Image 1: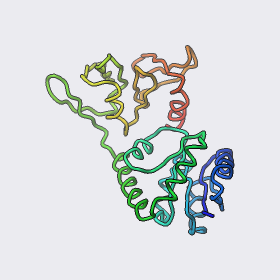
Image 2: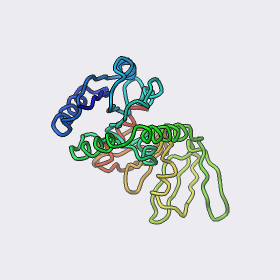
Image 3: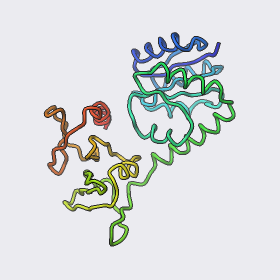
Length: 249
């Protein structure tokens, strides 16, 4: 049997994951659980001899990375769990590490567990070190962005950008001083460039700066009101992520 610990701030989420593990990963024995950063650190320090850690990225008193910084993460494998796409997931994409999106899919759980158990600890540790370094760099990204136009390259504070709108293969950037800038880049390109800043894609045509969202209203399927007075639609599949991020500001 392989020993594992679950860390998630939602009791129902822990119960669901435990049930899925019991059903689909019978070789895994859950020996302990925790619901916060403080509890997680204490549990890992008491139970150091484990094989797997299922770690929620977003916790009520911090993040899963706060736990990893306080324990020796090089003696077990970590599988991240989360309900939302955020900075961490964007950083994980650069490394061959696994994460599970809630609700947990049984097949993805089985694949993640198999991959973790089959990976040599030394190899996993190297991946984790690279990932944590990438994450720290990503979350410390300067609050400026270089935007190229026909007449040259211009530097702007990301905080001055209210929103971006798709214009086919072009993107219009709207600033808080009322100015607009047309870029020869798609909205997807700009979403990737601004991934580590406070921006969220709310619709196929709209990328918004969360710092400039004034309100969310339940009309026409969901809309946000921006600081420039614009009212933008929110795609149904984007609603839960947006509301979560707005709630955490």
